Length: 321
Image (cartoon, rainbow, N blue to C red; front, side, top):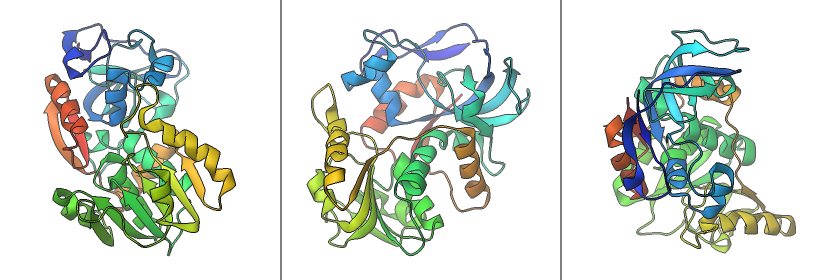
């Protein structure tokens, strides 16, 4: 089968399209014929091995898993021992171990039936970003009807879902994004949209702030947060040292949160069939729609990652296999 692989950490130039063996599903795993695969910042982190703390879990000198990609949508072709609920021919979405390939294996607990209203490309844009946004809005911020929510990076992969999920929860939502993405964020349902090139952040106070941009100090974010509000930090894309980069904010938030009235929450998202099913229900009900920026063929995966890292993506970038 064709797959995008890497044998060392580095920029997108380290990625190669090669022929490798089709994997076999083990106990609790499903073999999926990949029809589309999403591109998210996690792919860039695993490709570059940055920050260095990433390598502690994925390989010190080189990636243990050569095939890149995590988000997927496709068709089940085989199931391993102990798998219930999936049979060959089922259309699924979720996350797998190397989805930039014609086939991949995935844990059955990280797959769910593909939403009937979505194409494979749309469905592949959901799993990681959608579940991250769900964890931010539902689990960490605990957004309730009538609350005021600020989403920073509202046109990105996670931000585009966070806007829609907060609206679905009954909140008044303000989205912060660049000038070329204002219409997209309005279309996602934001009540107000702020162009960060004109105004860094609004002067209002919010019950919840979901920051997906990763480049503002905690002190600045706390100034737009209500005295008892919740700040959710998603990712760590700020510039900094190679060991932690922007993830140092998460550590400082953990240390500061017990000392102040505001809740400062570094986000940890869980991938599960249950969370995917919750998203699928909202999607089929018309409350959430994936924002797909562009699609690339499998051989174009390096360009898709460059496009994402350059800040050009409006919504999600997707590889069509």
